[in-house]
Length: 476
Image (cartoon, rainbow, N blue to C red; front, side, top):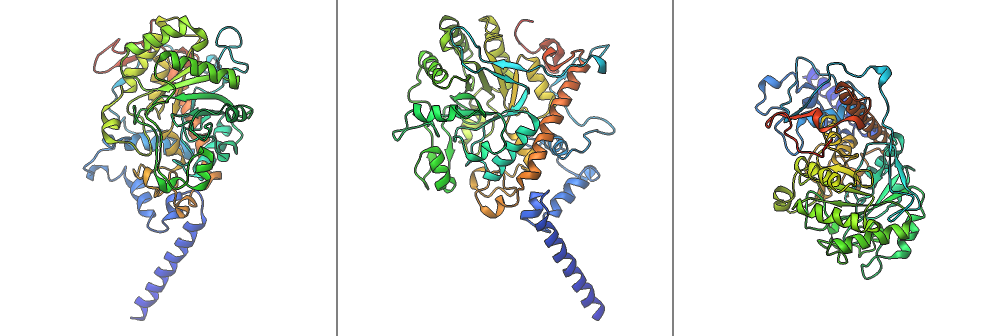
C-alpha cells in the first residue's frame, strides 16, 4: 500500500512538473494553452506514420487541407526535413514535365523581382513598387486574427522579405510592428479609410499613404469563400480597439456591404482605381473572384481604352478560398476554382496586350510548392496565401475561426488562448515557411529546365485527367 502511495505521489509530481514546463515554454501553443493533455495530439501526430496501417482515414482525404499539406507547412516552418521515404503518398491531379537536362547549380538564378505600377504615362503612380518575392501573405484582418498572430506575421514578413496585406479590417498598429512591406486593403465597408457615413475619407487615405511601409493599395471586390457577400466579424470580436481602427461601433456585428456602394460597373471601378492612385501616389490593385469569364474581356478592354483606369495588378481568388465566417452555400458553390479562374485571367490579359502592364496575383489554397509552381506556370506573377501562413503560426484546422475560441490563439479573442501564441517564436516560423516554399518552387523550376521561377510555362505542366495540354493558358 505504501509503495502504491509513493508511486501515485511521484506520478502526480511528474504531471505537475510537466504542467509547469508546458505553461512556461513558448514553442508549442497547444501545450501552452492545454498543458499535459496537449501531448496526446503531438503523440498522435508523431506516431501517425507508424500506425498508418491501422488507420481508417488516409492522410490525403481531410478537408479543406489534408494532413500531407498541413504536415509539409508544419515541418517547413519548424525548419525540419521535408524528405519522404518509400514513395509518394500523394495522388496528384497534375505533374510537372521535367527536362532531360535540368539546370545546374551554377546556372540557377534567384527570382529577379517584378515592378508593380508604372512611372510614366496614363495610369502612372508616383512610387511604383518593386516586389522581391513571388510568394506573399494574403489579406487577413486584425480582428479576424488575434493581435499576437498579426504581430508574428508582421515580423515574419520582414524576416522573409515578403509583403503582407492587411485584410479589409484596416491598418492596425500590429501590422506596422515588423517594419515590412504592407498592402492596405480597402473592402466594401472601407474600414480604416471611411468617414462617419461610411464613405471614402480622402484625408484618412492620405495619412495611410504617407506611411512608408504601406507600398500598395488593394480594392477588394470579393473573396473566394464568400463572393457576393461582405466580410463578417461577430460582435464578440469587435472590441473598442478594433472598432476605433475600423471606424465602427464597438460590440456590434461588423458586416460589410456585399459590394462597394460607389462601384456598380466597370467604369465606376476604373474611376475608383484612378482616384485611389491619384490620392496615394502608389500602385492600386483589385481583388476579385471570377464568375463569368466574359467579364474579363469587358474589363480588360476598358483598361486598354482608358489606361488611366487600369489597375496595377489584379488578385484572382479561387472559390475555394477561406475566411473566418461565411455562409456555406457561398463557400461551397459560388465562384470558379483557381484551377479554372487563373488560366482565364492570364489568357484574357494576354489577348488584350496587358501582360507587362497588369500583374496577376493568384490565391486560393496555394500553400505548397507544387500548387505555387503551377500558378506561376499558368502565368501568375505572384502567389498570395493566407491559410498557409496560418498553418505556419500553428493553426491546426480546428474550424473554430469565427467563434473566438481558436485553441492555438491564431483567430482567438479569448485572452487566455491568445497568450499561448508567442509572436517571437512564430515570426521565425513564418519566415522559415516562406523561405522553404520559395526554395522548393525554384527546385521544381530547375527540374523543368528553367533557370528561375519566371521561366515556368504552361507546357511544363500536364493535367493527369486531360493529358498533355490539358491546361488552357495564354499563348507562349
